[in-house]
Image 1 (tube, rainbow over the protein chains, first blue to last red):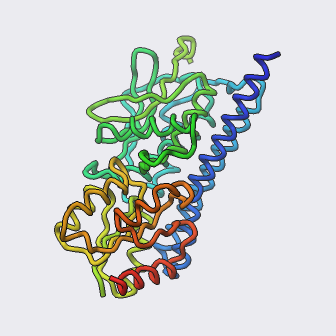
Image 2 (cartoon, helix red, strand yellow; image 1 turned 30 degrees about the vertical axis):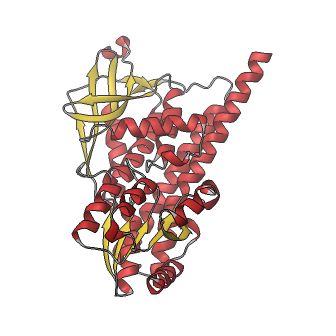
Length: 240
Length: 127
């Protein structure tokens, strides 16, 4: 009973922290829209900026809703199904491409070799990668001289297939992960940590992946540094 | 007309603020990080700095300590225009205002473009 109460308390705390971090993060797209409309330059480019900011906000809310639904389940694990990683990455790239363009980030899709289906929850995985990708798209232009390129990538590793988002600056992704994880303990950061990172997006992605028995981890591949999720390949699915 | 150094890490917001300030006749230089801001100030001395405190790697407070350590930059007015709510740095505010010369503190989500341009004009006039 006591253990059950503790679990419920933990879930409640996590949901609260998730909500706080999402609320903090939502200020950015809303502010972008407010200032753009105030500027009155609602030409083609201005309207596109407003549309992208709105989409970013909606994506964040969508991921948050999914995260809360997961947290409210008795067993906080998603139903797993065979999922094509390259298919998910393609969809993620489609969703993120206009947002990346608005931030001047070149987003490329790179799937190394052919991978069989992995065990994951398609909607959850997609939401996690979109959330992670959005967070890094917002952050990477501020890291000079990182270049403004991100890569959505999948490759094999010893434990399965790694799907994630990579850039060419060492440290940026681990910093994003650290900031995201800090939100588990405290949403507001102390003065000495006024760092510009989109912690909420990483936090949401991590929470979603944890519900799929996975988690975000720092990863390095082909001289690119990134954050990715290790997805197990079911040997039986190789016959499919 | 003044030379404004806008330290803003978000590319979309930076574009919007730049347009707004340029439409007021100012010359705007955008820096996305503390290091870039110091380099930009070194290249062209700004008349005023509009600063976000949340920056990648080195935050705005660290930037201010470095910025104010150079004698010829000490008189340059700084407007903190930030996502950090004023309540979060209540203790730091006197230090910010006195030691680091932050004349104006604006909470970004609640500051309209008109208010920002007005505060910048006031700060320029006062300097």
